[in-house]
Image 1 (cartoon, rainbow, N blue to C red):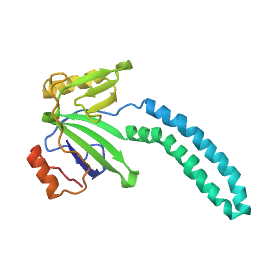
Image 2 (image 1 turned 30 degrees about the vertical axis):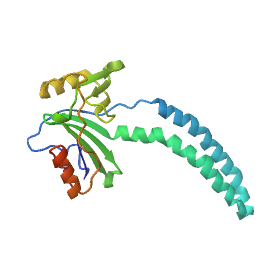
Image 3 (image 1 turned 120 degrees about the vertical axis):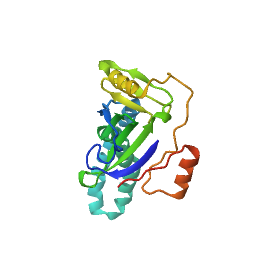
Image 4 (image 1 turned 120 degrees about the horizontal axis):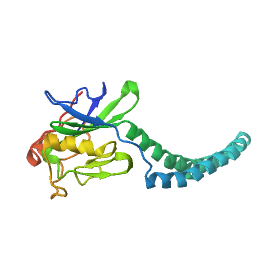
Length: 215
């Protein structure tokens, strides 16, 4: 798996290799996970309590600046943690909304956009045929589901529409893989903005590939 950063122009600009054909692409659907609900359940009361205490402390600060210590404690133990917990499901929603999956005749692509429109960049995770340990799908309601091709959480296309069709496109283009075959670890994985000699040596020695850097 190769990971590299590049500035965003459009969804597949500077992503496809020469003569590489795009066969399928889709965005995942968002669904609440148990962790999202737990974060919101614990975060919302803390945030509301923190805001309520802020409304009581601010008038006191106007009369006595010594009460600013109480405000700091409120932000540290109530409002701050509450806001952080409540933001977790919203941040995950933004990540899902800015994610796109693609199947080409050479690679599986997992593209995540970051930043604002004028200063946006992308993280691209690329999986070639030899990185797949198996192919299977986990279906949910409405023909949605996960297309799974490895043991790690990021080696799957999560909650995509018509997952069976995506699986058939992949198998038709790449050939079948046995379900739950012995797992082969994917290549060294990290976000790179520049390539070092150490990175190059690792890829060439361990997996026969070199990280690619694009602007």
